[in-house]
Length: 144
Image (cartoon, rainbow, N blue to C red):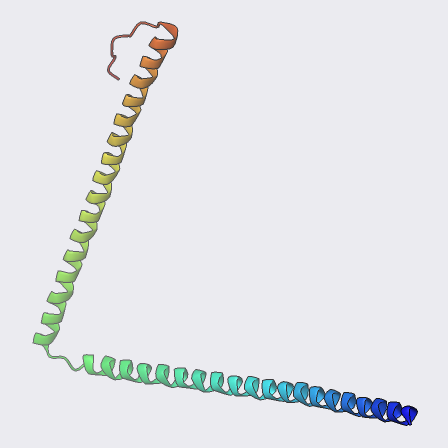
């Protein structure tokens, strides 16, 4: 009787093990299928996004083409106004570049002056330390 009970338990344990293995296999297969479907959907969404961007580009090109066609129909007075505005923009751009160059030059000069002042202070400190350590007499300041 104990033998029959032992055989019955081992058979049931084997069946339980097989059932668990089947559940695990089903889980992995379903995970793979879900991943495949998600990837397929991602590719489709990317394709739709690209198509949307292409449509936007075509729309912008159409608008620009219409604007360029409309620019041809300007009156002489409108053309003169636009030319005057463009000339003002050119003048302002040149002045802006000139001011930027001046700012850059002045900043560079200021940086060099600051560096020179720091170097002079450093030389004075070194001379003072040399005097303390070596008894070197202070030289007269020379202008360079």
